[in-house]
Image 1 (cartoon, rainbow, N blue to C red):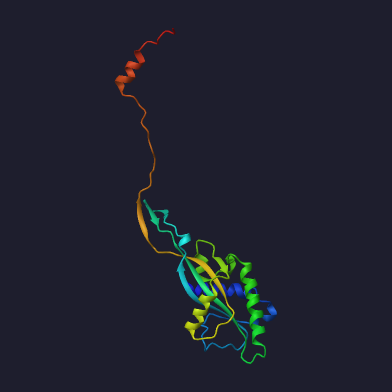
Image 2: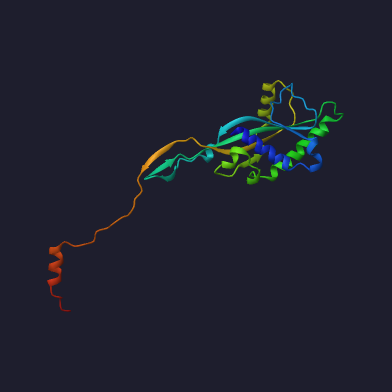
Length: 206
């Protein structure tokens, strides 16, 4: 599933690269530690956080008729997948900061254009997602990023956060019982009451 998400994000980014620059920009999902190096300008998207989105949690199961009984399927869990997006100049670049800032600024504009991943750009398992893939760019704090780079053993650099919310099915099911075929309300009177009612004379109006 997560590899399909990577492929989907790569398709989104590549769709925004001008044709004349397709071979001049690389996309990587590798860990950007102190040993990370680029041979050409590279946009790195490192998946560093996978958390449940509790604001979107639903406890209402969906009911589906399977054979002669209804089966309740637990609602999928909404999960936020957060990527740290950084730009890397090629080794030997005489002005690496300019190259990296230009590439990161381009990525920022591109990612902000899409609040949802277009359906035609979904890849693999992402095509089967029951809900739109919502996205958020620019989140997190500078302090969190500082801790991130410290953990990786590298020097801090300009970065942005990119979050995609996906659905993860748990497979939980519940038997809800057979469907109700019909409902009959018996309004008939018993025979004695019906006979007495038919023989009772009508009252004269006063």
